[in-house]
Image (cartoon, rainbow, N blue to C red; front, side, top):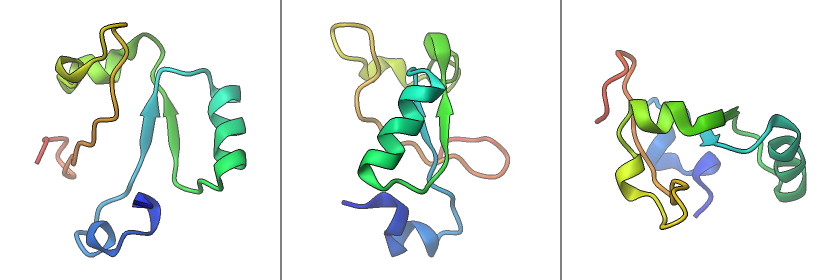
Length: 78
C-alpha cells in the first residue's frame, strides 16, 4: 500500500508523515531509495512514539513496529 498516494487519506484531509527513530541522513537516504515524498520526522529516543503511546506495539527489541496512527489537527489520536 502506498500511503502517500492513497486517496482514502487525502479524502480525509490528513497528511501522511513517517516518524522513525533513525537519524535524518538515514531517513533521507531511504526516502531517495524508495521514492518517498511524504515528510519524515526523526524521533531520536522514541519521544513521539511514547507521547502518543504507540510503544505498546513495539517489537521485542523495543523499537516501534509498523504502526499507523491518525492524529487530528488538535493533536488527538483518531
